[in-house]
Length: 199
Image (cartoon, rainbow, N blue to C red):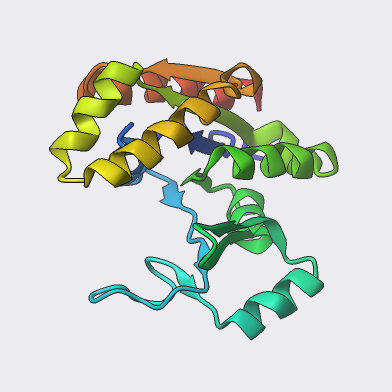
């Protein structure tokens, strides 16, 4: 006798400007939705105080990162602020999905494009993935960034990035129009269920 599989696994890939609440949404999905886990990404930057290798990030030396690139181990990777590299190992996403576990990740818009590209050659990824843009009105975004204690220079740089990212919004499967933390979370839950039904 065969038993039906539990609910199909889902990969939610979130993007949006700094201050849109992506990280908070990811943390809440993991905390409140059974069977969800956060994808642990990799970086070449040094750990900050309190960060644990394999929990917050996989911390790689530049040489280790290079060898992973050469081996084709990344779904996506990029330079950030021309200083450090960040990336997502294919195994960090595909292994949990293959085991029936749902995963969530937040990456930049360029990273989402790389996920889409990877999904064209990977049926599991294509079936399980939903890309989500967290959209915040530009005027509201400026207020949120100001509330985080960012410098004027940093706010200006992030606003410029946000305006570039907004041009990519039409490529996403779903858009959450950000209002407040609770409404945004409920919108993300609805998207998760929709992607799940596709599986």
